[in-house]
Length: 91
Image 1: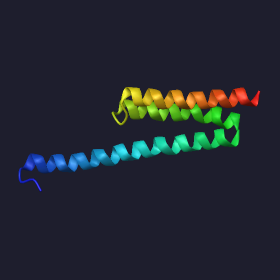
Image 2 (image 1 turned 90 degrees about the horizontal axis):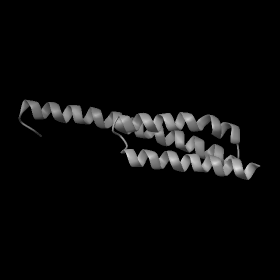
Image 3 (image 1 turned 180 degrees about the vertical axis):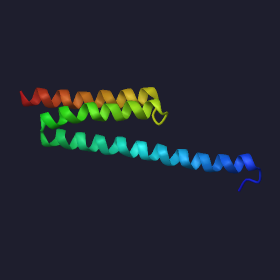
């Protein structure tokens, strides 16, 4: 445990930031799971509705520093591709 006052404060603020980041990452994961469940069920309309919401959460997490730029772009790209493949399969 740190002895210096500023280091004690850093421990506390780092814990709070970690909790926020974990919550944001969990929110993104849950949204991705809902989207993938809709894709697996073959529900094109629900998937179309969920994709912008999921992308928005990923972008917000990226801007807050939870995800790096390339990671966020990769996630968005893969989700978009899943929706595209679902739309092509349903035609």
